Image 1 (spheres, rainbow, N blue to C red):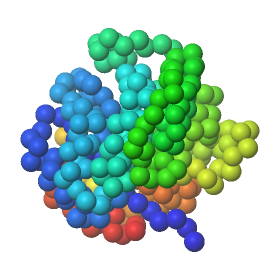
Image 2: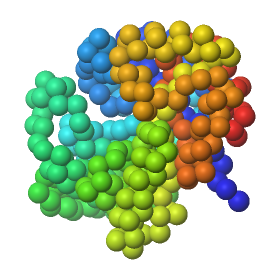
Image 3: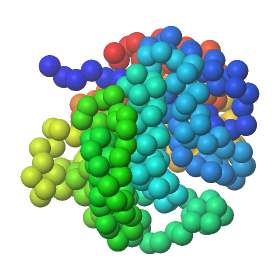
Image 4: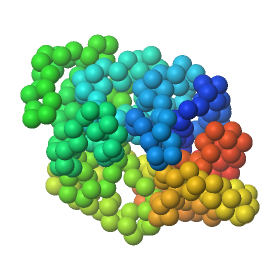
Length: 311
């Protein structure tokens, strides 16, 4: 039997009233979404036109308190400005207080301007990925609940304890996103439970997946033990003109909707078959980014016309 298809929803992190964020979370949970996702950025994201950004962990804590069942994900926490031991502690606390609902996304960081603005170093990709892998080694060790000692090139802990440990055993699912073929996908094969990427045209996506599976084989890992998720900028409506209007407004705001090769757009009869193409290639979770993620009616429309149709 094929694994179930699930849908997550990206939560906006601009300067929004708490009541709006609470309504988004409540609507997503009521409409059957699997998870809520936030990004870990500090300023000027998804574009310089949005300088105000709500901090990731603080928002996740509020989302946990406002909901009961829906899962809570980070896409992705940045090793470059988060001490991994403290990150393990914060994520474990969130997992305990939410009743085991954490989806743990972790990454090496890529947004150079915000990293330097906040006083952190921004080394080359190979160093950032090596640092991320050390961070994940520490995090997984701490999540066992046992004292953890690790002395790496970039991170170290000395008999550190993370108590209480996460509710989920052996640990919350770990997601790593990206498509760097030499280093990043090797790190996915080594550390992740879930690989996250974008809905590139199918040949390009299949190529990345084949590279990932080759890394799994080299490490002696069965690729079937690694789930796949997609972060999907989605523009859909009942009529094509509405789709065009939504897309035009989204592109004026910048961010992911500017990249045509990462975009899924059209009426539901176009969108659903395209998403099913990725299901046939192993994707089990779609994390949807909507043009106006505070539009509750649009969340309900997507739940009815896309989520319900595919699940």
